[in-house]
Amino acid sequence: MAFVYQLQSRLVEEGEPDFHRDGGNAIEIKVMTAAEADSDETLKNKGCPSAERIQDSRFTKAEAHMNFLCGAFALPEKRGRGRVHFGYVVLKNQMIFIDSSGFVLSRLQAMKDTVGHPKNSPGFFLADFLDAIVADDLIFLTEIENGIAHLEDQALAGTTDQFNHKLM
Image (cartoon, rainbow, N blue to C red; front, side, top):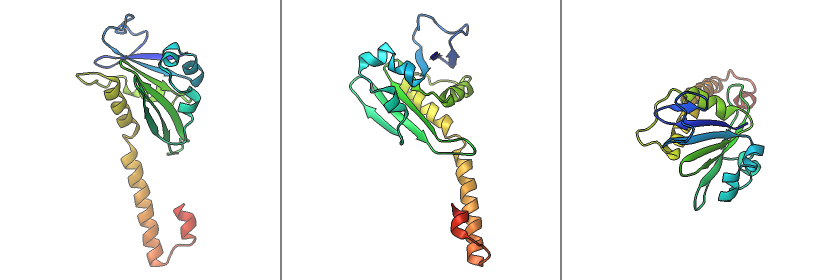
């Protein structure tokens, strides 16, 4: 079952009192599995590539088409989390994520009470979503850098065994 949100002054989940059945002026955010996306009429009518192709990309990419933007994110392993792959399609008033792992849904839940832009759009939302994904990456990269600096100090002092193995 696809999960549906609306981007208003905040992210509103379907079923909440603020969710407008008629859509209003809100941007719709959907999270679908690859199977759901492949059977979605909106995506079929736009001529989107297959959801499996989008979601299972080995690298991050974006494809610009006449009426939509689609692409994929491939995130490396980090702190016990395995590799993450998910796809996206950006339409005029809709943002669709293609993800069978639950990663996107967990990030959307974490973003629910964040304030949107004064002029909400799928593009601004995608930028906010990317910010949320990389929010703690600086800390993660600093930890890696500190570990490498420690190994370098040991190597220069001649006190490290198996430097190459520890570096990996």
